[in-house]
Length: 457
Image 1 (cartoon, rainbow, N blue to C red):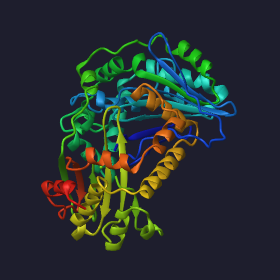
Image 2: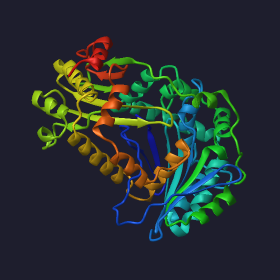
Image 3: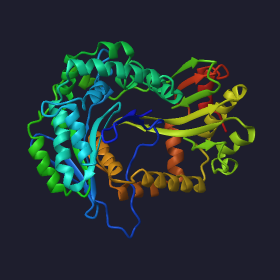
Image 4: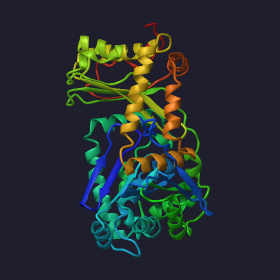
């Protein structure tokens, strides 16, 4: 899964998990052609901090946040879990505000303060009425620059995170995708979990937390993003006021250097057999679409694979996924079935469909996929928080934000020939990564499954 998202809603006093399966990353999409072009403005301060906004003059609320180019990927094996631990401590008090004062301040303005950690980013953001944006920016900078990291708070959160780790291990999808990363990027930082191993959670010290902030929370690796009713120049002025004292550059640590090295994808598999789980849950990292036999339209879905799966009752559901990082990614299919005697048939037909994409794709299939992709992207940009997320993520990971119209034009230009050429380069006779959890005895060995990547359909 691309990212595990942890949100803290101080206004309601709740901690919750957002997301689940890492599905296609959020990107922009053009609004109807009658709407004005969407514009993203950017300014870089003298210390290297980037300010980026999408201003909507009629919006009454705004989302502002800081996207940091640092997550679990910027850790070593010994410090894995530090970024996520820091996120837990961010709201426990600063040198200016106690935890109670921080919560009360957000509550009094009716705002929401949230945070999440992923493999590549740490993010802190707030949503409030436009008039309260300066106060939100002040709170964000205070959290980032002045968190106290008190020993008592560290010990309390250590227990919280250990319990959270236990809960994550009960969620099969989370386990499958963590193992998929671990096998696809073996021995590399991108293959580690976000929470880190339990022994690290038990041993992380205040010094390690402080060093992570010192080494990663620097202006050159941050984007202050805003969306909604906050004009660009106003946010630039706030950034100059509150963030000008941030260190300009990160120290060239070994962890940072390794995090910027493109990881190697390793064809491999990992299997966790647990017959107490009544289903086989399998992720294979490559693209087919979605299917759920519980839905009324299951027999009539457009993809060829859904027809085969439904006719032969091979799966409870399957879902395509695309997990994107700044320099690599995992994409493929997640399969769930309680037909344990047909597990290998299910995998075989899925991979046979990938082989077909190398030589036989119809115009109708491509047009349907393009329409579905554009619709899903548009739905993912509903609201100022989603827009701010899109701005921050794109700029911190790639250096620029592709406009919604630009992305729509790229999608529209794709032809069936492009799909087949891509499939020939990336699918046909290529290695795959497999993560299987549950009653997976019926899944054939890796060599047999890998052989399906070069079969004639």
